[in-house]
Image 1 (tube, rainbow, N blue to C red):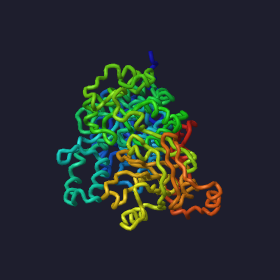
Image 2: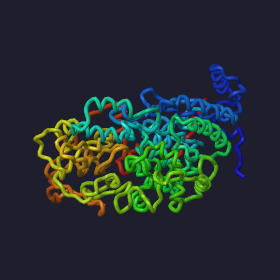
Image 3: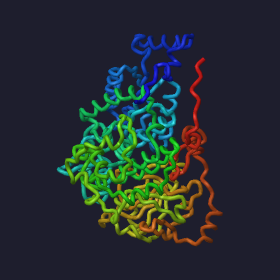
Image 4: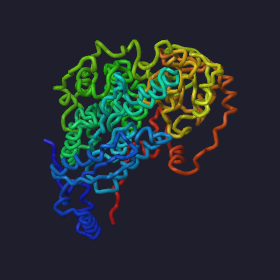
Length: 578
């Protein structure tokens, strides 16, 4: 039987329980907020890290969910306190939320450390909020539960299912090709996103929350519940109840997570046809708990687990359909032979126990390995490519690419910034064909900075009008998880620090061979050496601000883009109280 901690062993008691002037002030100021002594003394203090913001529609409901969490905490005898944190909501945050992932990770860790917090519920879900909150919580290593924001309701336009992000890009191309009108575009604008919540496709948000669910850091199945479903509120309340018990059990991330936990997450990742962004986030998360996880580990899992979730952008359905079909637990049960089932989870049961009773109610939405959405022979969720263009690796989602481009040689057209690229590509006189390889550089973690989602490079308008909807595109930035196409991403090392992408010139032949796992430029070593000697880094744009800190300390994509001073498991002292 698990030993339960005594109240005297909780870290919050250093603030509240001692007989000195400092503890007197802590108790006094808590009562200043209208709390009775009986409501907080002798209780576990539960932090609710809330990334709610009116600039983040994905998190617009998290104020209400925080109230539900508090309800559960009170019910189990805890003392809940809500702590706001930066909301790294996609779309509104520029130049990219990825610039602020590490900011939120730092904020989460320090909020938990500097306050009298015994355990925490982490409220987030939009792309970078999931890895950021957990990176910070892993480094702090107190009991935590991640409470995912949940996907928005299904969208539909003129009888067609529409997925946020995926169809935005599709219809934008149709508008540029002249196949829909401006009035259609305006009408579509107000109909695709029907409720609060994260993208209703397998974009980065549902990719990451589902991975974390499979790793055991959410209540079982929580990642699949739609944001506005009443079950979502009940789940949030259950998080509040469970976290109090986890504090007494001293059930920390370090007690739950190991390499097998991350491999379980990779099974979910590949089966979902998940976002390439997860490759960066998972490496960063793993480093926070001392797990050695690499791109090659991901490629190995992608070679074993096909895409079986029939959900956009790889399939035909949306996240609400996935939930009603049985959700993440039904998917994991069908893939149980790939899982380490005895891994513990936050609810106190093993992963195997959690999925044992799961049922699939729609075998077209959640398929088996014998009937995948994308057979492994056709494409994989993640390909890792190396060569003289990406010595440390690049990634792509071959399951979302046109098969004819998976082995391709074509001349490069190279751009140093998106403004020039967007202005140039629609020039009707531009010498470009379907075989051209579009290259955008200086979009990496240092160069942009922050590694924005610029990698789904636009198809030239004149080619769209000819029916072209895919081309080979290469970038040291990222791509939205809702997007698709033959896009080679995360090229490492990036151009801004002198990576080979900085040496490519318009007209150079680029050779992509996905089956061989290679991406090369057909340029001689002698010519590359000459270009390297001539290369000079751009003058820094940021002399101060968080962006300057970011550029000085961020690692490359294949290393997770974390800060060098945050990576690792070295202990940080508890704050002194005087």
